Every structure is written in structure tokens, then in C-alpha cells.
Image (cartoon, rainbow, N blue to C red; front, side):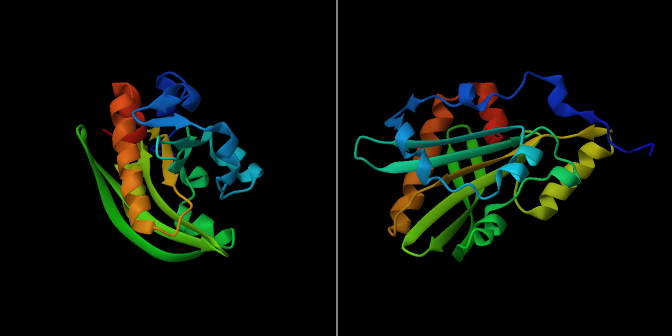
Length: 203
């Protein structure tokens, strides 16, 4: 009980309002609200409301008509009972088959983001996905890194926050999709305020 974490790091700063953090237009990208219905929500609403403090789903389109679906899920309490749900678990729960899962990275002018890539297929829908997760502004990859980060804060009596940042594209041209997703993230990293960049990308 003496080392049971009780203080939420999220309570020390301003509330995370994803709609205000992510610009509606940046670089060659602009929000296309009518397309958001294509975005897969991997969990039912009751689960989302329990685990996540804030959610954002948007579709962006560039001048060539190429689309990127953005989904961010933020949780102010990343204790064991409220951990983020990973796409490689949630997509199959929705009936998708995963054809590929591998580690990757995105190099930005502010540093490198360690990511995961996967290809999810459901019927005629092929959806290449790039995502990463954070614990208290640091990108963690996999359950081991996540647990170690939680323990680090837990020993100091702190409960970290965290988020899942996901970009995806509905296309069978997976190579182009992953390249486009990297470009989208790079462009967004430039457009973000420095404190938002730290919170969302660990940069």
C-alpha cells in the first residue's frame, strides 16, 4: 500500500483536448469531415468511455485526393485496469485478418518515432495501419516497455497518462500507404506546437 500509485500525472497539467491540438489543415492536408465514417472504432462505446479520456477521429485528404484516417485515443489513467488497447488485438476482434505486423520508425526533424505497422483485411477492405503508443510523453513499443514505464512511475506514487496514435489508409497499395502515412506524420510534426508534439509524439 505504501508504494501504490495514487497521483495522476495528467492532473498536473492542462486537460488534453485533442480537437484543439490537431490542426484541421497543415502542409498539403486538410480535414474532410464527411469521410470519418470509414474509420474503424476497434472497441465498443462502453469500453472506449471507460478506458479513454479523449478520442479524435478525422480523415485528411491531400491535393492528389489521397486520404489518411487519423485516430487518437488518450487515457489520463494508464494503470493496469485502464491500459490502451492495441490494434493487433482490436482489429481481429472486429473480424479483421492481420497479414503483416512489424516494427518501423518515422524520422522527423525533431527526432525519430518508433512505430508498428500492420495490414488488416476484412473482405474487400485492405487497411494498412501505422501506430504508436505513449506512456507519459514517451513512446513505448510493446507490452514489456509499457509495463516498465508504468512501474517507473508507480514506484514514485504516480499514475501516468498515455495515448494511442493511429493513421491508416483503405487501399491495396500497401507500400504507397505506408509511405504516405510517414509523410503525413512528418507534416503534422512540423505543424504541432512543441508541447503538443511532446504529448502526442514523444518528441
